[in-house]
Length: 156
Image (tube, rainbow, N blue to C red):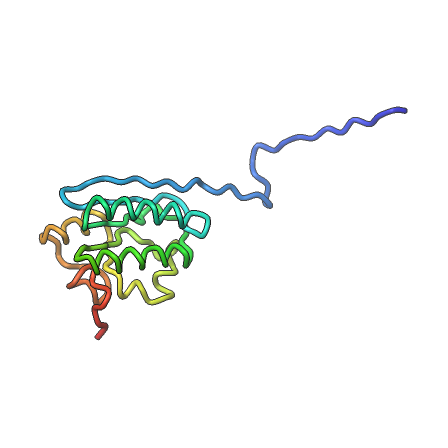
């Protein structure tokens, strides 16, 4: 019986059918009395538990939490639910939950659902920190800007 040899080469680049997903990473930093949680990567159903855990850790450490979304590449509605849950919980307990650096291209769910107009959002972490310190311009997006963290702020 003679055998045939099949040579298989492995391409160094992913094919059009492959997609490499960057690993989701979180970092937490304390700034005075606030905790900044930075998310890097995709916030979706596969990472929602880890995302919830990181925000819970931050809330346990401070009543002032800033979520830095400047390095978020994608966000689905499960991540949005986690954000809303923590925003409401912080507000109910007299705390503040601010978003910073959310980019429309990657976090469309905030705008599609109308929550971008309700959640206190800042362009940068520094802007959010300045708002907490009372030295900011108050330039948060949405009607809740004058009362950061208040989920019941009414839209006019």
